[in-house]
Length: 85
Image 1 (cartoon, rainbow, N blue to C red):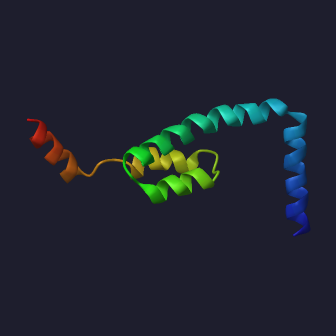
Image 2 (cartoon, helix red, strand yellow):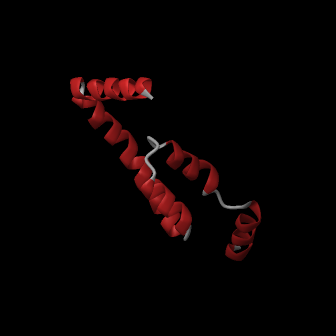
Image 3 (cartoon, rainbow, N blue to C red):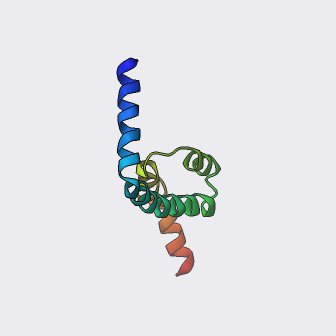
């Protein structure tokens, strides 16, 4: 436990010594989070919206949602293509 506290203190020191790192992380996370939340809301994925809103995973979960979990199913895509034809 003491080792974990020392590691967290070290991480805090890194951010204090490099304030630009926080800005860089913010510019990385915000677009991904915004896009993932937008997709979740438009697809009516309420559970995903809440999870994405509350968890901060440095955009890893958001990227997975955008490229893996929000993809339309093949059957749905085929039906939509047939309807539009």
